[in-house]
Length: 475
Ligand code: F6P
Image (cartoon, rainbow, N blue to C red; front, side, top):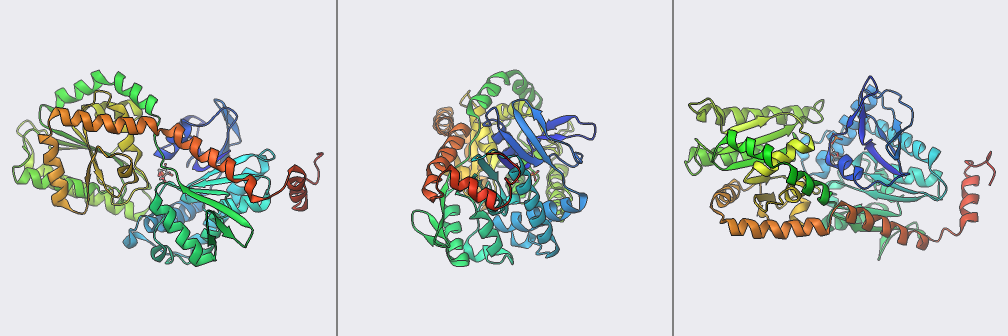
């Protein structure tokens, strides 16, 4: 079973289905096997939709009220955990009212899982929306094997300790048998927090209360290489059309959710300064920025949008060309995978300047789509992807001069160097694609569970019966 805040599809008011936004839903969609059950929210219009089959997968929508959307999703998840875990302290709003809603919604997800999970099933919980759910699931159904994967960074213990509910959150996560993170730093931060805040003992596993042991490790997520590679091959004509429209100058590309962690302002500032200084040609170079509207009921996201758009206006007003075209092409919309791939193939460089980022799957999608071996990746050292993609031009996004140097390097890079950098990055993504990620996590979960010493099937059934959940069923 998969458990995530969102189902793979959003359910419209009239029952129509559309792909859910975000890298998590698309990454998970490529790895689920027939027979999987997926528990998640169906989007703002989904109401109280009943379970239904979507292809080979059974979807169980969890309904959320408008009040819960505001307190659990906009509030606790996206105005407390998201900024805190990304080190954006200025954006953290420690509103105490939101905690109760976060706990109640986690409880609802846990109940939705335990009501339908087959005996002994593997349950894979995802991301920061559901950090309490593993312990809640385990308490109700000790027969289940529970994994948790955090898609975003885990902060260092000093930062994490700001959270008034820090113990409850750690205890919730430690309900899992395996907790997975993107990179080794996150693992170290989590282990330190568990040792300090709940007295867990660290050995090869974290040991809690002297009995429940939890494996913790890094599993860097990836993309479906074959799928993006195939999309790339098919996008040649659309990419050529984009290039014809934009002309011969260097084309830089950014594709992000409009989020203050993505460093969109930093990259646009670097681009603006370079054209002001005449180091990039204002009459021919373009920065194409796709900014997908996201979490727009959260004030910090509204502020970010205003800041980014003000910066774009300043550059474009100053450098508007005689034919009316603009150096920054701004698209405040989401693109489907085909349109994204056309932009990937048209660009000279993809620019990822996240200030903090669990992985950044767009960077890996770009690499997988560039079977032509063209295109340079400018990549923040603070994105998890920087640890997998050595062929990128790695930058500190806070260092605007360094970002500018990387942009100039893109314009000067000999084709042979582009090819060799892209070849090495493609090999890395192909070797460690999303299937490898899922396999590694699930195999580890499989291998660590028996060691927990829960005994055999009879013990599990007894435990469930004691907890009153099989009272009216025949064995
Ligand atoms: O891990 C980042 C994440 O929250 C994912 O859960 C999701 O795929 C993406 O960002 C989009 O966010 P949201 O679900 O808030 O639109």
